[in-house]
Length: 187
Image (tube, rainbow, N blue to C red; front, side):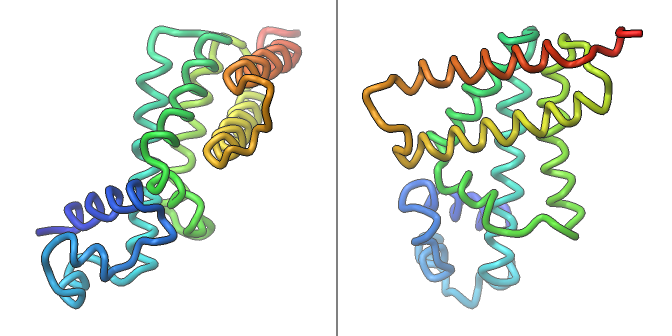
């Protein structure tokens, strides 16, 4: 057994039962070991949540990267946004962990967040934004996709409007906004 096994098991439990119900005792029981034995692999509950947050960001960044391959513009935005939504649907507990441990002053967590922003930034390449605007646009995308997926996962989009249609409107609105920004080619 190693840290990876503990984190994978915790992620499965969090996805199945919810992050709020995750305890070290449950992880130990699932692994068939005593709770004190977990401390060989994690430094406690906070360390486990931090590890889940790192893993969740890695899974998200990988999904965003795969989704955007070969796409540009609004198609890339749509694909990355749908990949984000899918990660939240498939891994609700793991995704929830990405917001539970503060990133500030933690270089590894900050790097994981920056990787997501970088992937989103690459998906914006065809908009030909200035470097500064591209960073702000990528951060805006992160906020929009996170907020949308968070509301969607909690049934926070009231009916009768179709959630997928609302998502398409958001992607179109963002795309129009990005196209309206000055490009790197503007004199």
